[in-house]
Image (cartoon, rainbow, N blue to C red; front, top):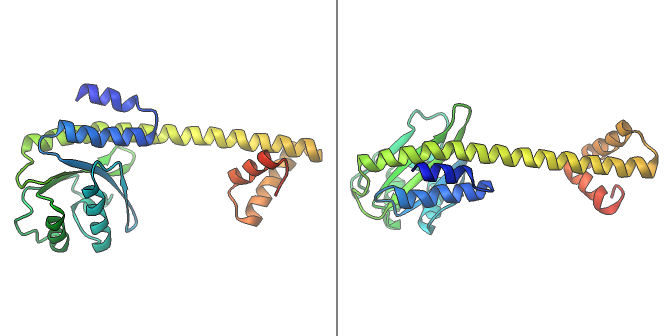
Amino acid sequence: MASMARELLAQHSVDATLEHITDSATKLVAGCDAAGILLLHGKRVETLAPTADLVLKSDQVQERLAEGPCFDAARSDTAARIFRITDFTDEQPRWPAYAEQARDLGVGSMMGFLLYTEDEDLGALNLYSGRPGAFTEDSETAGWLLASHAAVAFSSARSHAQLEQAVATRHVIGEAMGILMGSHRLTEKEAFDVLRRFSQERNIKLREVARRVCEQGRLG
């Protein structure tokens, strides 16, 4: 687990970090056959780094029904940070429609963990087994430890990616301003105002306007 935590922070991108998280779940959590991360955008579900098609199908069912344990775990307004469904052959009164379709998909048992830091909720890490009773208290402890490390690594990777994008955007805008200043004899402020006004009038992101100027040498 300690080695996995170090490897998580060493990944080169957000996607690589997420894939390492779900792959580690299948290797480190006893009983786990498949894993994925679910993000909730309003009522729209996004599945990240699924290790099997089952994960994607399960998330699609929950999105369609607007119910299910992963759906609940990913909601920031829910109090439950961990769930464990021991046996899908038993009645599941909280998610009756989902439970029936999950059985048809071959789900025997499930666990889920809210991925969160002190500053933000990041979705839910969900683990699947084809066998009823596959997950024990030890599995839950291992899953919780993995999710704790995963949340920090996910947040760090996402912040790093956002910072890189911000730096790249600033560079492109600066280059575009230089082109306009040279070709139209504008001041720095005037060049930026031209880009900003074009962006607002055409409803195009400022970064995209700047990129076009850099590629074409002019506003297009």
